[in-house]
Length: 149
Figure 1 (cartoon, rainbow, N blue to C red):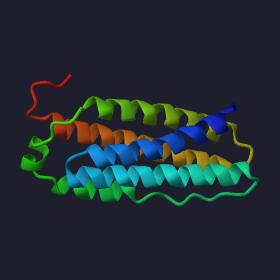
Figure 2 (figure 1 turned 30 degrees about the vertical axis):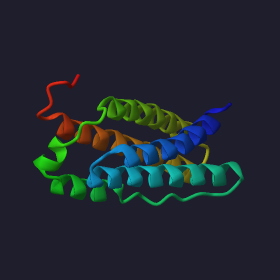
Figure 3 (figure 1 turned 45 degrees about the vertical axis):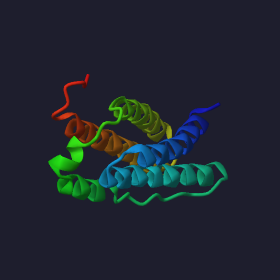
C-alpha cells in the first residue's frame, strides 16, 4: 500500500470514527463538531479517490474551524460539566489527526504538480486544525474533573 492509499484509508476510517464520536458525545455542540470533522474526512477521501482515478482536484478550504469555534464559545460550563464520557477518545483522535497531517505534508512535499501539492497541503492543514480543536475540546471537558490524565 503506497502513502496515498494509506491516507485515503485513514480519511475514510476517520469519517466513520467521527460519526461514532458524534453519537456518543452527549453534548449537542460537541456532536455537531464531530459531524463537521466527519464531513471534512469525507471530502478528503473523495478528493483522494478522484486523484487516484486520474482527476485534477481542487479542494476548497473547510468552514469547520469557524463553525467549531463558534460552537465552543457558546457551550456553557453547566453543559460541559455534565460530560462523563471517555476523554481518551480525544487523545486517540488527536493521535489519528497528527499521523494523517504528517502523511499529507509528506505527500505535499513529494507532489509533482502545484495543484496536487496544494491539495495535500490543504488536507494537512485541516488535519492540524482538527487536532487543535480536539485539544481545545478536551481541555474544556477536563476542567473540573478529578479523574483526568
